[in-house]
Image (cartoon, rainbow, N blue to C red; front, side, top):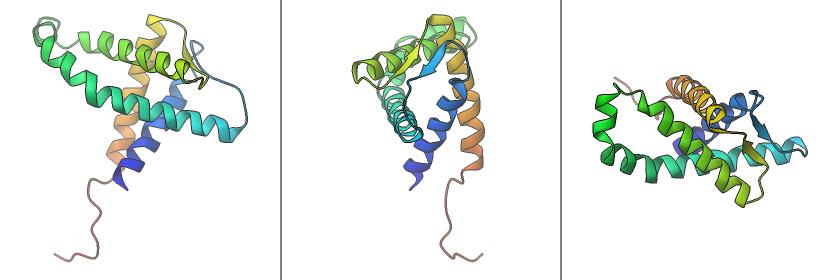
Length: 129
């Protein structure tokens, strides 16, 4: 259940990022757009789970030297990768360039962070203290 909540939170964050003029979501009805957002959220989750730790490990020195500012570049490039994968799957999600990807990644990071704060880590099932 927790993974579904995380996917929905990421999909909402991507939807907020789609308000930027350089990031778009293809046409179609609301159902198709919602499905596209969910699939893009899954793609972003898979990329962040598989590729991002490798990049952080290999580029550890760059993270230290730039005081973590390289994170914005890495997240933007990963969003561009997610948009490319979505394009290959004909989903209609697109990012118009590197800087739009960086701005979109910042928005997705902030919105998903706030939404993940709201989602509880553990759901107590009738436990008493």
